[in-house]
Amino acid sequence: MKRLQRAWRLPRALGFCALVLIPGLFPAVSQAEEGVTDTTILIGQTVGLTGQIAGPVKEMNAGAAAYISQVNKAGGVNGRKIELRILDDKFDPAIAAANAETLVKKEHVFALFQSRGTPHTQAILPVLVANKIPLIAPSTGAAVFHAPVNHYLFNVRAKYQDEVKKAVEQFSTIGLKDIGIVHVDDTFGGDGLAGFTAAMGTFKLQPSIIAKYDRAKPDVAKAVDEVMKSPATALVIVGSATTVSEIIRSLRAKGSAIQIMTLSNNASQSFIDSLGPAAIGIMVSQIMPAPHLVSSILGQEFKAIAKEHGVTASYAAMEGFVSAKVLVEGLRRSGKTLTREGMVRALESMHKIDLGGVTVTYSERDHSGSEFVELTMIGRDGKFVR
Image 1 (spheres, rainbow, N blue to C red):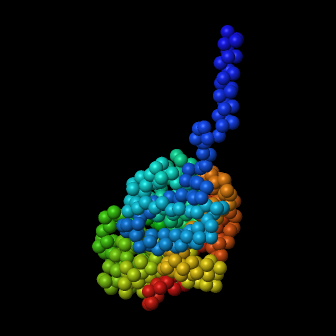
Image 2 (cartoon, helix red, strand yellow; image 1 turned 90 degrees about the horizontal axis):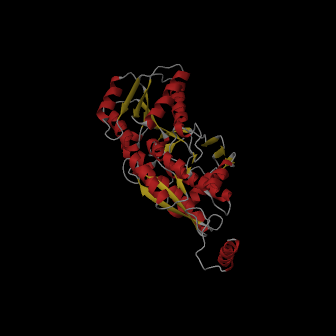
């Protein structure tokens, strides 16, 4: 019996040696992370290329693409060039979730980048956790993505609630105490309302009006009628560009001179253009430095790259540009051997990193990124004035 056992073991051992000593006899098993080859890194994005936010998204993606193109032109990141795989979610949370699943499971992307919208980003969170894949720079400032910290999600832009607080503070400072809010009835709008309620409490003010509208089928006439009947002299509007533009134009058409402020998700040239003459005097919060500001290193770099790639110098494009810089910096810090968990650790090593005008900081306990917020106003020339 022992002789039979020895006879079986010897060929098995020789067979194992044969596998080791004769390379090419069987295909090698790749140890590379999904989405990574010797020459490329595949990054996925689900975003509303069509639908309500198509205009701002076009500008944002143009800024990101310009920076990535510049990086690739210079040799890429640690010898690898970045490829973007973008799917249109039509600004629909259900489609966003399905797209994220497709990008991870079928396209095998290394990481996800720059989703857009609060409920849309919430819809893809299960995909991040299930596949242990990072999402860098979601274009949403909802507080839910800041606390508690999500191990796989890295914010770049400041929180919406900080933007709303800045508006209430400004209104109060210039003597406008009758302040109201109109918000979309989803998690984005709810987040804006929470910031508004907190800010009003801080300044010991009572809301003059709180109105909401459906995201998919907004009743603009109803919202405008509620504002017209209220005593509000200042108004915060939380919503996406198309509907916010309709509300503002309708209010002005009815003769309302109410001071209006909306959030940075509408900080695009396409939003200004959609307002027409009603754009003058509208306040918009910004979570990026001015794209035309050449007194900063970031502004100089953006201007040069934007000019080379034919990108409109807008705040939306600047957001995409900065988001891409954070993505690339994380990839660089990850080193030559790219892994998703290594990318998470690399991003968490970025403490108070000055990108040339915006400071971004992360740690294991903080994935907030930037806290930059300032207010602008749309001038008579159809441009943002600081």
